[in-house]
Image (cartoon, rainbow, N blue to C red; front, top):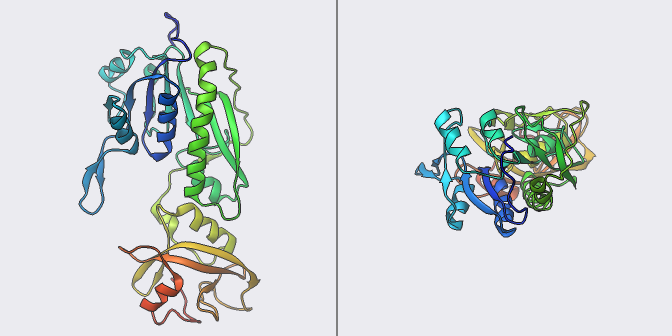
Length: 322
């Protein structure tokens, strides 16, 4: 990183913020609340969304616009002109939170104190794009946030600070997302002054315990009833609200929004995916039972299983779900 000029006062630094989804918005707000001069926000370009497929700015772009902060949306940062424009901002530090683009060396080196990242896991576990969802799918009992000094690798930089968050048996991806976003913003505010005055202690990540949180694919949300009831429950909690955990009922694809593993086993010999006597519980591959609570038909709001059954009279004991 460049060192030809001193960093600004840690209480009010020139900051470039780089982020895209809802997760990053609290961190942007924390920088503004701390009195830093956020000179520019970088975010992903607007993309079509909704039924009308109108271009929608990212959550970070919308928040930056409301705060009166200039926004830039380069598709990539490999162009020397884009890199020069970034360097010309004269930032003391760049703060990155779920931005979605790899930062080339010229960008990493431009700010006086480099680039720091707000990452939603306890590194080195769950480096990569989907750490919240992968932690839930794996059955982790805790996760957290790491503030990291960025380098050229994928979430491989030295750790500056971290905090832990428990994952309970009913924790959903949305709940965990919101908690980690808030905790990450608070941890960023606590850590940044030491980064700016050069006193932050950077601890290299250990070589043991490295896992990668690959990007979610919609196809992963198809429920396989031969899996364990607990694994299907984790899938539902991890994939709600997006991309959704689903099964087929006749010719229709149904999203399962909420479910719970039941204590009782399924009757011996019951094929996985079979609705049991109450018509609301399903036999799973491990011989256990998953109780269905809420589901969603295409184009409709989530509903209770009882309401769903009114539209499917044959949603009855003995029916096998696809």
